[in-house]
Image (tube, rainbow, N blue to C red; front, side, top):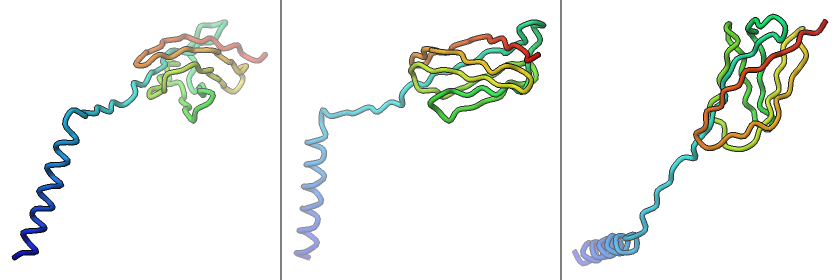
Length: 117
């Protein structure tokens, strides 16, 4: 009985000290706001939308492909400055430099690729 009483007192002291020391120290941890880039890739001469264009973001492992309408979206990008690398068979590779992304920003860009002739 004496042992149970001492354990109960220790637990009570720990709970009270935790409450006292935690008071006033409310810490809110928010996930950092991510940005996104979306747009459309077109043929520079015909204006046709290009499907299957590989779009990579330098400095990340992010890579997407355009859909049948030439549209793309890359979500979950940390804020910062980035370069996009675009490539498609029979087209010249393209580099879109210095895209600045702010927290929660949604950049929309249209890109035109030139065919290799």
